[in-house]
Image 1 (cartoon, chains in turn purple, brown):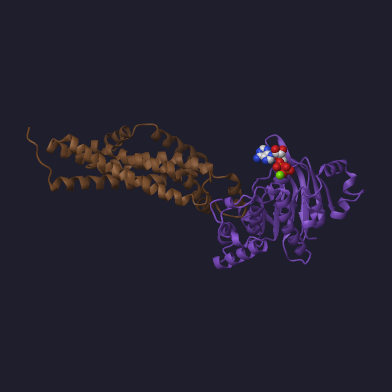
Image 2 (cartoon, each protein chain N blue to C red):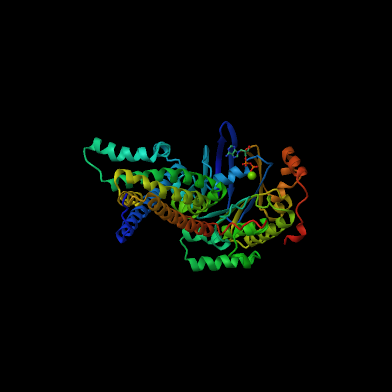
Length: 257
Length: 223
Ligand SMILES: Nc1ncnc2c1ncn2[C@@H]1O[C@H](COP(=O)(O)OP(=O)(O)O)[C@@H](O)[C@H]1O
Ligand SMILES: [Mg+2]
């Protein structure tokens, strides 16, 4: 269980997260919606320990991320996929994927490389293991980013607008992969996801719950069907306004249900 | 005026001088590399007092002439500690510290040039600071730094010639001895110059090859 309890985060005088509470239980796919600047990325960065908290508490399976030792253990349980991919440009695709499992999880190289090759094949990049990130398209890079995260065998997967730097076609490629991952969840025992996205239709299909961040406050936290119900999330003017501004979703036809 | 001819012995003297120059260069450059990049890493992780202290000290070293530093160490320090220093020791100390100062500023720029986003990715994936330096920051900073480092190396090789003034028998001092004996300054200094050139050119070629290897991941622009 990931538990965010009354988290406050400020940058100077600007309060970016203002008492945010949220839990993600194993097996859930929770989507965070909210307009640009509402604090979604900051929340993800607080969970993976890239930002220090100014108040409240975050635990991952009971490990407090504000404590350096516990954070180091918490980071072995979760993995992040970044908006701008954040791959290591001086390493091959294969090494990008195997680095942390080898160094952090101390798994044997043979085993990690075999898994990396299998992951790459599963996202259609079997031939790219020895390429460098600079030689790949954005969509391919993000698929590598997903493989890098999955190679950690994470209990929790954090995804921050992983398709917003991609064109619609590449977005569809990446969403297709995430759709499959999410579908695998329903069987249980797989990766739990906390998912920041602007792909509302996609979120509606794969999420168990949707939360809405507005200017650093989490104003709604509802099961997906209730979020889109007229007397649920849509009852909030801010959410209605947000949804009406969202562009029609990416070519959904290409995304497996 | 009678000229003494060149003998085999002169060749041996030059070779010995060259070996001293190269040895002094290699030793002090290596020490300078380690110290300078170590200080840069300390600075990069914003270690409070230590970072500022190192920065100030190294800035002083970078902004004063090597010859002055050499005199300070060779003549000044013994007056302070009431104990003479050997020329080679004083030369080694001065050149190491001076190289460290230049390496430090190159390494700081190299570390700053590594993209923040991938550093954050590595941290989020649980890499420790040491692992981060070894696998992410170090190799990339080195790729940025290698060209200026090669330039620095060529310069520091030539700077070693200053140690001849405190009595180290390096290539320049060997040339000096030879010149006094043979009284053929043009031939002697041309020979010494060619030897320095050959050493510097070799360094540049090795450095360029090394740079190409480090930058293998950055595909050349297909213009
Ligand atoms: N490092 C930072 N320093 C100062 N302000 C920041 C920093 N990171 C984010 N912010 C501010 O925090 C607010 C929330 O940003 P962010 O979490 O990126 O929003 P979102 O991901 O929802 O678009 C924005 O106003 C942004 O300008
Ligand atoms: Mg964001």
